[in-house]
Length: 137
Image 1: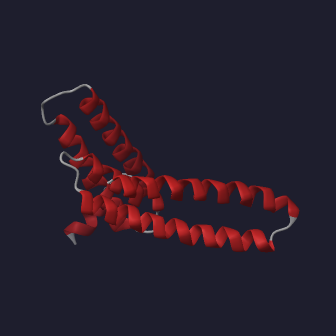
Image 2: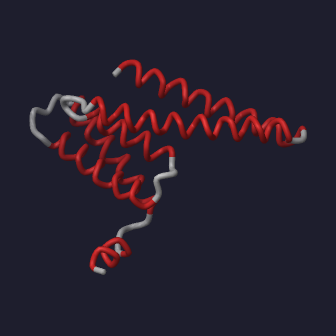
């Protein structure tokens, strides 16, 4: 019962998502500045905690899987297995989205087809970028 009350008091999903993005951005700035302290790692771990709460709430949001993978890749040293696991899950989800868009485009009229083609290109680009990240790990 106490856990349910705690969950109900959490900020909204989108707010927590943006907070995690900011924490990851802060960690990148701190790492780029060459700081030898642990602030960058603290930001990364806080982002992972926030993103974990988002996955627990809704594990069907591709962006969250991507961000968790990015967070694990940003740890020092990188947590390669965890990053790849989350990125591969995101890649599988994007493949499903791509298939769905292709099917919709096949059945769409001319007005909808242009928009669906743009969405398809965006998803394909995301998949390519993600595949590159996985290969580079």
